Amino acid sequence: MRSHPHYRKIWGSVYISLLPFILSLSFFLPSYEVSSSVYHEVYFSTQLSLLKIGFYMTLLVSGYMYVTGVTLRFKRASFFAGRDGKPWNFLGFVVLGFGMFWAGPNSTLIDIEAFDNLDEFLTFYCIYASAFVLMLHFSYLDSGPLKKISLNIAKMKKYTVKDWVLFVFLSIGVVLITVVEFYYLYQFNRFWLYVGLYGGLIGCLMIIAIYMSKTHILHVHHYMVGMIFLPMTAIPNSYAAFIQGLCVGLYTEGCARWGLDPLFYKIE
Image (cartoon, rainbow, N blue to C red):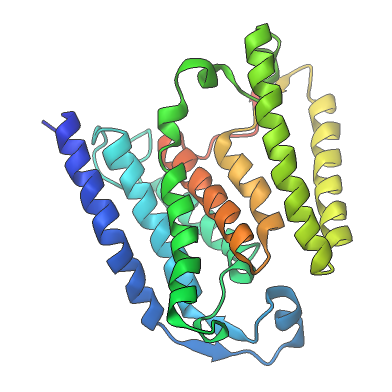
């Protein structure tokens, strides 16, 4: 019964219907004044907003449950079970996700007091949540030509011409999104900070990958892609909110479906 498509559609509809109401509860959470000038410089706000934290963490937890339930056809022992049937993956996902909040969402999500009217506030948060829910369905893209697209070096060596065309097309899209994000980072005087951050990250990964190339192979999972792109969306505007919603959704879907798998795999 649980694997029946109509059963999944019903529960999927229930989730989509109830999510706005559940998220709206976080709008009543208070904010607290922060005296630190550093906090204001980093997060564009003088408020420690429980609204932001509640909204973001509600998305994470409910999204994880949606993936383990609806998109994975209720095959696990519980909504919080990982692939091994145990809850440790979920706990790691929540802890890591909460850490990610300080790397992006706390800067991107805007306090309700900063909006001119309620409609602007609701529209902004709807953009974020809609992008998040969209990426919870990433599993459905894991078929056809897209199934072959991977950053696994071994798999890339087996690409056909069509695979390379699709890979290049997707790469161009990612590059365009990144260029726009860095343009906004430039506007907010954070361009060189993030150039240094991502340059150092890529450099370190390349050195480690070369050093371990004889014994291990690099595999960038899609939950990692969400984590990698999230910091550059730490800007308080609607475009960044949409892209960050996609990143958080991608992180959630990947963790719920596959787990917190490692970056390097030992060659067998």
